[in-house]
Length: 386
Image 1 (tube, rainbow, N blue to C red):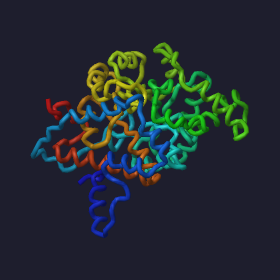
Image 2 (tube, rainbow, N blue to C red):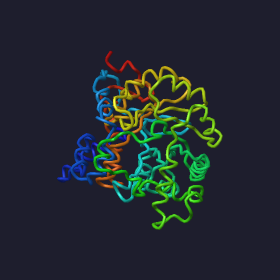
Image 3 (cartoon, rainbow, N blue to C red):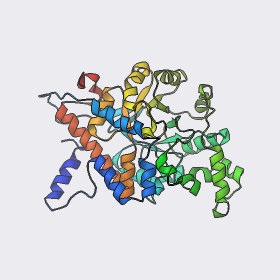
């Protein structure tokens, strides 16, 4: 069996000595465990979604509707899960989504995630809204693959400074999130009046930035943290952005640029026309628009519109190896996962993140084997039931 699938054998052989996994291997069960064990406000912040949370439920329902048709006697004993993405070789088509304020789940937050991702050869996408600075995370990542995600602020000088810092710290690609320029109506957080940023959590990249410091007054510490938080609220997100602003990104970033939050084919075409390198079909895990289209339902039209011009990635709802296969079959080149690794982080730190990554990749490897899929590049719509 391939290296990725070895995690299954490790678990079974440890069982001979009476050793059970510390965490569930079913990532839905992992979420239920996290709900029982983690601090309630922190769990709610990660698990919650917009409004009635119908979009988050629709994401999972869209995967349930699709069915894989396995093929027999295909001679597949060691499937090839590797791919090249934006000129970078990856062992599997799975990346770690940018998720903010990870220190509410574990003190090491992004540092633990960076170490786990680097150890397993998985690409981490670091959120602007991090509890540790991009430089600290780059150091923790060592030689690991890392991309930087930008929440485009109102202050263009600050945006330019973020991009320069990320480039200097060795982040290879830029992911720009388009669908979170203002916070959605999220009842779980509202009912507890809980927004981590207002408590100074998740603004490490801001308070350490020279442009932000100049606006607030440097150095930023406990004595002026409230002023820093108020300055953050004034600059985070810019709802006035339009497609005419996109050239700014290319002017200040010379590597791959991927726009995240695309659900409409026309928006994907705009991205391609603007010279972007990729798009992420995503509804932010249901966190922004209640009643929105499931991301998986939006994927085929986006892939058909621009799949020959830019690389199409996918997130929102991935929980299993079969989910990865379904997303690739519908036009994605790779997927990103979010909440599962965050729950792993909260429950067991770096070891928990490793457990989630290894579980998902082993599941992918094994499912490709039993379905007779020789390589991720050969996953096509025909593998799904009509």
